[in-house]
Structures are given as structure tokens and as C-alpha cells.
Image (cartoon, rainbow, N blue to C red; front, side, top):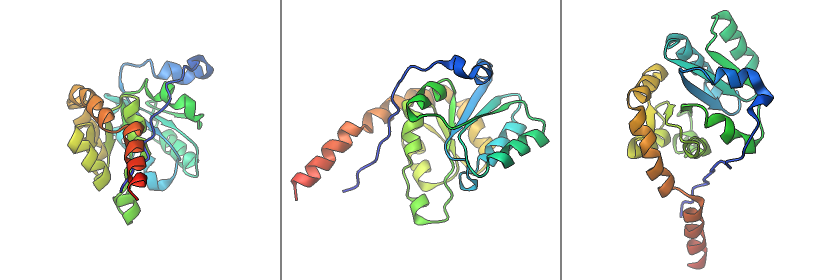
Length: 200
């Protein structure tokens, strides 16, 4: 029996004035694409920065987190003179909803180099969905399945095409989030787990 480890973000109130610079950044009218997580090469936040450069008129990018790649990513942004990319340090789990729910699109990337990645159902999907964010990601089977089955995002190895696709169908993907969250809740998964244990 497969049980999904569903992560629904707590909707805690936070004080946005604690980070006035990012608060001001999010007041922009462009679509904000957010990446929230460890800044490691395998998650390819660099591809999101490349997309920010190519789509400067359409989007801005908020990158939340720390990791080995952070200095390289900041240098990439500086070298290209991008003013539509902003960084935030890692934040407490209870604060994630408050920040990312002010964004428009969630970014995920899981390469297909191993079976774990190819067959994953990342917690990040449920976190972004619980904040109401349509998503963009690469052509990973786990992402492609959820995105296409529930119309909640675009999976494409060309991240620019994925972002443009979400922007074009934004209202459709936004409306589809309710069915996805209704089908995937920890209460339902818990019942399946308890039923499986009881049946042994």
C-alpha cells in the first residue's frame, strides 16, 4: 500500500515588515515565480534564473533558501545585471505559507538520474498547492503525472516554455487546485494507512 507523505503548509500569520525589501519586491505587478528549498545544483535553481533573464518583461523570481549553490546563483544574477531576481534566507516552516502564498507560480526540478527522483511525489507539490500556486517543473514522470492529471502546472525541460504555458492558462490551473487538494489530504492518507494496518 502506497501512502503519500502529504505536506500541507500551516496558514500562520506572519509580519511581512520583518523583510521590507522582499515585501516591496512582491508588490510588483509581474508574475512572481518562487523556488523555496535547498539551493543545490540538483534542484537546478540556475535554470530559473536563466528564465528570469529571458522573461524580464513578464516575471520576477523569488528564491528562498540556503545551500552550497547560493553564492554561485547570486553571482549569476549580478553578472547578468538582473533586477527581477530576489533572494531570501531559509525561513521557518510555519512562515513558508505566508511568503509563498504572495507569489504566483511555484518552481520544482527533479532530474531523472535515478529511480527515486523518477518516481517521486515531492512534498513541494503539496506545499505549493496548499498555497494555491500553479507549478512549473521539468519533464519528470512524477511531476508530469500530477500536472497533467489535475491541470495544476506545466512540465517541460524548457523552463521558459513551462512558465509561458502556465501564464497562458493561469486561471485554469488556479481553479484546478481545489480538486487536487480535495483528492490529496493527510486525513484521507491516514485512513488508508490505518485501514492497511487493520487488515494485516
